[in-house]
Length: 241
Image (tube, helix red, strand yellow):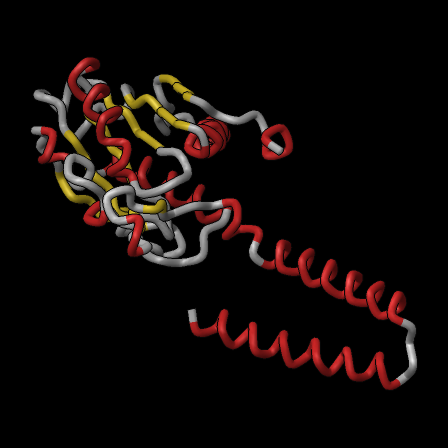
C-alpha cells in the first residue's frame, strides 16, 4: 500500500518537471500532448510487463460476506462458513506441508477414503482464483461419489502456502512436491493416482503428466499416473484473450 502512494507522489513530481521543461523550451501544446501520450503509453506497457505475473494469477477474491470493508478470501479461514475447512462438510482430513525443490512450503489437505491403501487417489490442482477451500463442494463430490482419496493443495502465494512470487516454474515445483508426497509418504497405492486439474490447474496437470512420462522413460521403476482428468481448462493464454 505504502509503495503505491510513494509511486504516485514520484509520478506526480516527474510529470510536473516534464511539463515545466516542455513549456520552457517553447514546445506547442500539441507537441506536449503527443509527448504526454508517448510517456504514458510507455509507462503503461512497462507496468504491464513488470506486473504481468500479478495480473495473471489471482490468489485472493473479494469476500461477498464483507464487501463494504474490502475483505478478501485469501486464506481458507477468510472464506464464508462451509468453505473454511473439510470438517465443515463432514470430511476427515490431514493437514500436510509439501516441501518443494526450492524450499518453498505449500499447504495441502489429504482427505482419505475409508480404505486409503486400496482406494484410488485424486491429485487435485485447483483453478486460479482464491484458495483451495473454495473448491470444497467439488472435493466432497470426488471423495464421496468416487470413494477416492483426495489430495488438494494451494500453490505458492495462495492460501496458507508460503507467500512468495507466483510463476510458472514455481507452480510446477508445487505440483511435483504434491506428487512426491503422494508416492512417497501418503501410504496410498502409487499405481492408482489420477491427476485432476481445473482451469489453471489443468495446465499444471498437463505439464505434470508430461514431466512424469519423461521421467518414466529415463527410469522404468518410477510410477505413472493412472489417468488425467481436465475440467474447464484453456488451450492457451492466447486463446483466452
